[in-house]
Image (cartoon, rainbow, N blue to C red; front, side, top):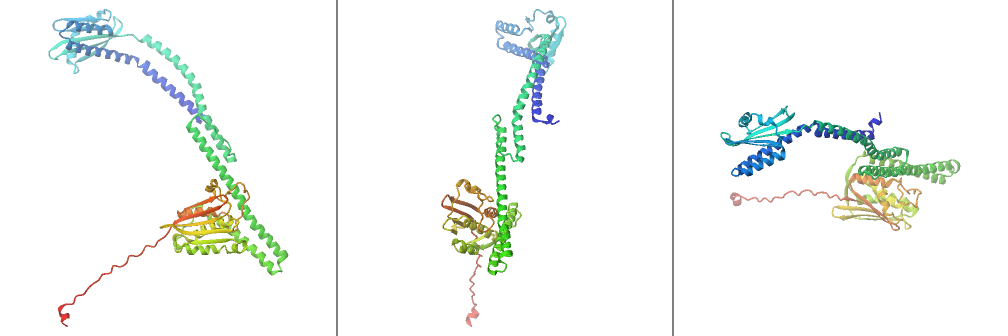
Length: 496
């Protein structure tokens, strides 16, 4: 049952059906309808000869020799019996082989039928039993209907075609059998050529769930098959890339989860075994536990936020606020890194830059960009934050570090979760603060706001991450129209 519904079988069946239809069409029009076409052709020859004789009569009426020669030539060429009757004479040109049937026909009824016809032509077909043949006759008049100059009567035999048709039928049957036998093999060959690439593509597609993404499909026969194979191979590469990213993501998240849990457990055991009676050590160990707990909570919250952003289920609480004022508060959250690691964060911000956005989410964007720069900063431990008006009505926020930089071919992928920007560094680098998936959150938040964003980097010199947003300008309220009214005193008041 599956074979009957396969492409190969259906292509073969349709190919056979087309060939059979063409053979039937050929048989009908060349053999079955041959007598009808033959009769139509003979009738057309008679009508054409009659029209030529009428035209020759009009042109050559003064020259009887030319007219007789023209009639003789037509009768000889088409093997016809032509009789021309006038009030003065009756002329006959016979190239039918001297058949007596034509001479014995009563032409009077034919001439009268032509006069009674609306077209002026009378056509008849009958069987000549004496000659065992079919006769086509046609009669018309020349001149005025009420007083015709002459009558033309033409007869022609239809040659027997029965034996010829029998030969044609046997020959056609022989050719049809050969064609059908060839069609069976040719159609099977083309069906295989068409379906084999599809079978290979299907086999490759079935291997994708098993993790086999490296199969290649090389087909050069059909453009559509080539395009389908190329599309599947592109999909395989994307699936393989997604699978690698998924494995990296799971490994990196597991690493980020395991590290704080290990530290929490280790310091809890130290408190229990060593520093329980020493308040100073105990406080220091408890602080590490609290910091790692906060880091773990931040990672879980960031993963949850990223999932919500990608699913499109978060709501935007839009409001107008001063981004210049908010920057200082965000940067102050990195004070602990300034004290412990000597991180320097330089802020260069224009005053009074107002934007319309979700305050919480945009602060998260600023924090994640600064945290990313802090994580990958260079030997100078300096991060430069800029906020300025790029042009009227448009602000730009930039965060610059002087780290290793990012090669141009890796820039489009840095917004992916835990994407490694260097093939030389296969070790996951733990963020100094935050979860390590900040750029993915930045990308989704900025796209949700509709803000432009990007990254510029040069290997060995550092990177600059930026986004641009329309600056909000409050529309001034229209000033009230002031009217000056002058009161004019009347004469009575003036007298007073």
